[in-house]
Every structure is written in C-alpha cells, then in structure tokens.
Length: 309
Image 1 (cartoon, helix red, strand yellow):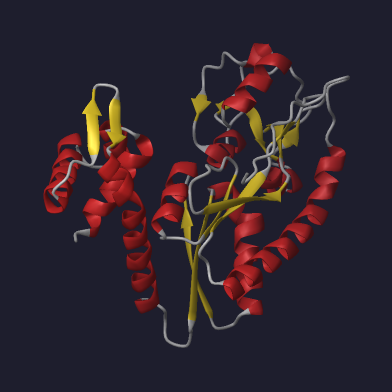
Image 2: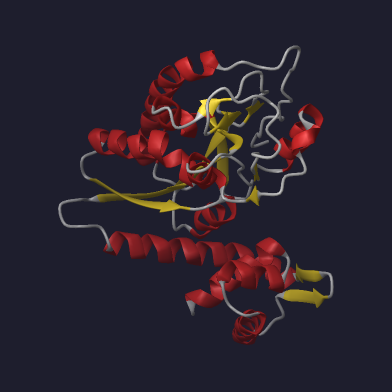
C-alpha cells in the first residue's frame, strides 16, 4: 500500500474537501483525485460521496478511516525507530508553534533528556493545521498550540496561560496608534474581543497571519501590534519593544496535545517535565504581567476551556 495514498485519504476525510486537501498537501486537485481513485480501485469500494459541497465518507470510507490511521501510525513508528541515532534507545517527536519554542519547547527538550538520557528528540514547527495533521498521522506524539483542534485519538490539556499585549517599537506610545498599528491574526475570538474593546483598530492597512514572526516586523520599524507576552519578553527586556499604556490585554492560553497511544512511561515523563518547565516559565513571566496596565474598568473576554469530554 502506497503511504502517500493513505495520507491523501486522511486529508480529504479531515477537511471534507478535495480542494482543501490539495492546499494542505501542496499538490494539484487532479493529483488528489487520482490518488483517491487509485485507493478506491485497490479496495474495490468508493470511499467518498463527491458533490459540489465537498466530499463525505461513504460507509466503507468510515470503516477504512480507522485502519488508515493505524497504517500511518505503524509506518511512522517504524520510520522513527529505524532513525534512532546510535547511543539512544528511545525516541520522541514533538511539535509547537513558532512562538512557543524559545521559552517552552526548547526547555522541555532539555528537561526530558535530563530525565531520560537515552531519549532522542525530534522537533517540528508549524501552525495549528500542520501540527494537528502530524499528530493524527503519528509524525509527532505531542504538540503545544495556542488553538488546538480536537480529533479522535488526541488528548488536549492546558499547558500555560499567556496574554496578548499591545506593544510598540517606540516608547511612550498611547492608544492613538492607528497609523502604526499592524493587525496580527490571533483567531476569531481575539478579533471579536478587539472589535469590542478597540473598534478603531479593526480597520488596519497592514494585516499579517504570521503569528509571532510579526514581532520582527514591528521591532524593525515604527509599528505596534498585539503579541503574546511570553514571546515579547526578550524584546521588552532589551528595550526594543514597549508596552502601550492603558491598553487592554486578552487571554491567550497554550495547550498541549498528546497522542493517546504514547508509551505510558514516556507519557508520564513528558508530562512531569513539561509541568516543571511551565512552573519555571510562569515565575519568570510574572514581572512582565505585573507591569502591564489595563484599560479602566475593562474585563477581557475569556474563552471557554477546551475539554476532552
């Protein structure tokens, strides 16, 4: 069985669309269609009901989905086991969004390898869709994300609380920053909350879906924008960014996502070390959060916690 066909099937099943799947797989729509057709020919059954509205799994497709996920998991386990370097006997792959690596992900690696010296660690970076896909396929066993997606076989748990704060590249900035403001896409919940708190900033001439990479843009020109406090700390400490006085801040928690089939001893060690890293990071972050000024009488809108129920 061609593993590429399996991965394509999983993408179409997850997105419900051949078009969306081709965007995620970086291939043409005709290539996706051909792969699914080859898979259906091999199995002797149609796997999707196709229509202008999208693609829906047939009963045979729903039956095949769990086997497809198992095939991917076995393939990734075999690939990773073979790739374990000499001198190591265990392996773990983790992923995280860009801004969560410096003060969380890297320290987690150090803590895990200190607790289990025989452990080889592989790391991936990406936005929510990419990391979630890697989790589903078994490419990684754990991921840290700001906006997790619940999927069968995955466990989502709170990791660390963060906040989106308004910063500027110049000192003494006030809320009158419309000409300098850069709109960064932190998800629909933030966009809605910002429209309520600061509607004058919703019509920006510069918008970016770059996550914390947008900080590099802000730092190097006269600009301002909302960024995670944890990621901004090093720029604040260096005097390259400055907190905008009287600006609201918005909750932006990070979550850890686990595959539910991780070996028990590895899962326990990973949870324990991540908890230690989180506690240390929270102590380090406290001076920054204590220094933030909020708008008078403003209460940030908090999202409902994600659960596994």
